[in-house]
Length: 254
Ligand code: GDP
Ligand code: MN
Ligand code: MN
Image 1 (tube, rainbow, N blue to C red):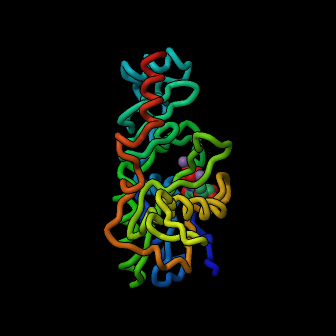
Image 2: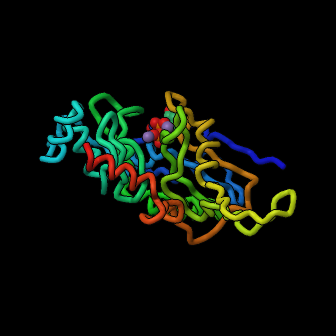
């Protein structure tokens, strides 16, 4: 068994309004069921999600959090503007974004953008993935999947990895429940986070710095192609999310 991961070369610095699908299409020959993995940084740049820190006016809640955490109230405001819930204020902001993704700083980024600017994550990453996918399919005439990724930390281990934040035509979770193990025992709970595993794989070629490789194509994993899917399938329901419940309790105590 094997698959390929191919970094798409020659992607320029992306600016607001750039036609990202055609830039990608010009630099890779697609095959049917390629999985196109795109860093949210360049999706956000193309969508114009670029803001000047000095133009942001913090509201009441941002000022309150800033007093408690000692961070820049304007940055906190930018995080709040993309969050539906704050789970941790200090020593970092852990939030659930408007789209339902839980991560540090709502994915608001100060890296890989000019000084003094902030890059907000795409507002609706599923919609961004779909727009990219539909346009790339039109240009190439091939069936494609798309994953929009960001770099996220994990709760229990050191080190960040690529994580899926928006998807198009790919099965994000593989349910092993009901399948048998090597010894014929039926698996009862195992669900494999395919979209995050693919994001992590692509991130090996993207890196986090000046690599300039925000697009990676994964070829040879055709069986994850799946229409009508959403990143929402990956988020735990409120009822099941016991870590979030615990964090809310801690917030109340502090
Ligand atoms: P994030 O994980 O989505 O926040 O993106 P990163 O900032 O970690 O960048 C991922 C990859 O994309 C790295 O290789 C960066 O050098 C690259 N990158 C970021 N912005 C651009 C851009 O505008 N053009 C190109 N060609 N690469 C970029
Ligand atoms: Mn990021
Ligand atoms: Mn990254």
